[in-house]
Image (cartoon, rainbow, N blue to C red; front, side):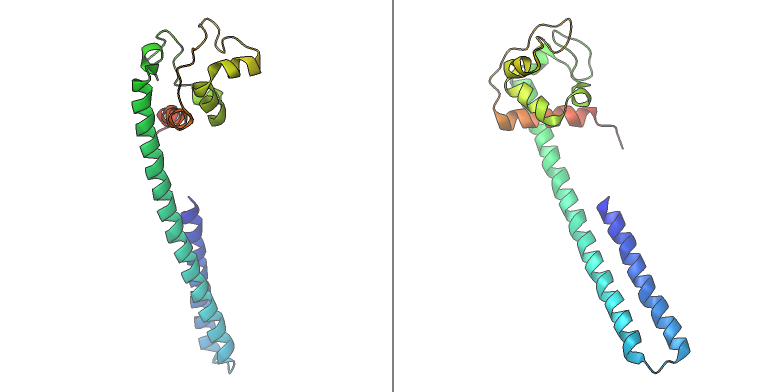
Length: 162
């Protein structure tokens, strides 16, 4: 949404340039260099803001593509690691809890840490298991990049539709 603010700033700069040019043109002021300076400065500022907005949009698209790739890797890892044997994401309780609400209950870092090493989270929180009525999650040997991808997948699946 940063690009929207930059686009608004672009509109403001162009408006300043146009208003300045029209007002001082009507006055027929002998200080043409001041008018030209303000107009040129406003136009250059508008171009700079528009250039920044363009780069912000491109960065946003690149980040969205990276997140989509991570979600896809996470969905694949969720299946390959057998997470779906015990958990569902929005399908109700299987053996372990439904993970649809996990990203709302725990921050991203905690989720990643829990996927990698559940026993360390249990001992750090002094809570075995984290969810009442379920058994402890065993360590399944998920490495950090894979755990990041699974956490991204869980977060993306729970994100509200736009």
